[in-house]
Image (cartoon, rainbow over all chains, first blue to last red; front, side):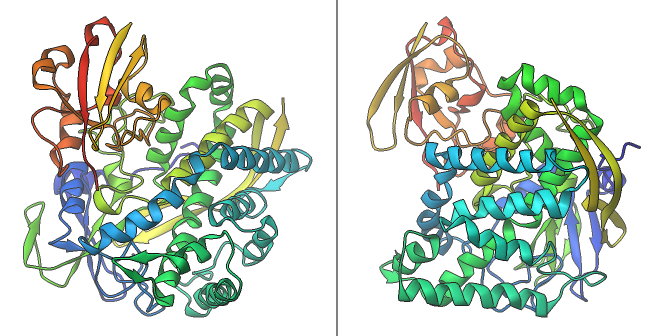
Length: 385
Length: 104
């Protein structure tokens, strides 16, 4: 097994019965594993709702550490539509030329930084920094603010050995509260200020609603981006020919981004709360229990993807669900795609090879399944072109 | 060379000329409203959904099974729906008229 491989632990259950089961803090989850079944469930927001108790659709559940509803993520149609429409244009800004140019400069700089070092621990010294700096663009706030987020380390919501850590999560929630207060006192051109000035359905957003959007923005784009970036480095370390190919055939970069994101599936799954007794994959699920949409499993479904466990860099048809599916698809996807696109272009231009020196895998324990989602640490040496 | 006409959701008509690549890319390069092409054309995001004019179904052919599966769960799809990232520009598409589909 290659060090960069992410095996698919769901295959047998997906093929034989279509679902898996796991417990999570005494609130069990029926995991939907096949792509077609998953899409149907994701689309059926009436039976499989997101607007449940805040934190309950997240796995592991955040019910005990969070009361604020994340918006638009934990709101169902029809209310969802207006919240989503409010934030959508802001989260499409990564397509603008200025945004792209600044992000390109940031990624160029950080690649130069790691090239100048002998060895680099990728998670802390590369991915976390890159993610934090890029987030200043998404929020439209000064670059220096990223230093605060980097100082939190990678585990904002979790501490070693514990699924969730309320004290750690409070660091983020208190920080966001402070920044909202500042934006009320002196509004600027940042996301906080845009939200504070906004109206949905003729009503101004409440402070709690603004906080809900901000928590989503911080939480949704942190581990996911860090894993996508770290896993990319591990992949290129073992596939230097792919760096050469991207340099010689830059036109395939977009496809390569989608394929890496399919393969990595940085978010393993997302839950829904069942609103009526029903069935998934001919398996009864009861009202007020949870199902999960297991993106990582669906993205390896051999009924849809040829050679699902291989990274086919220029895969032409790639209907993956790594950014979710239907109403609640990932709000930050445009930002994430832009990061990955620029990262691949920059690595192909500047990096000749990467050597893995040391690593520790990050394995999620999901009931009957164990899934590698990335690395706790990954030490490498970069060699420039 | 193919002339392709897009009718936007607010009934504006945009006619473009293309020689190669996908119809989605042509639309994105020319900022046709409602055609986003978020996934770059790998049939993953359904943000390039169009309805083919009834008289032009023969020009485009029908959707593949994978494309069909994407469209199946789209609230705005009908029997003339296509994801235009899956339409390759060629002479055969000359004169094609596409209605940009609504989305949430």
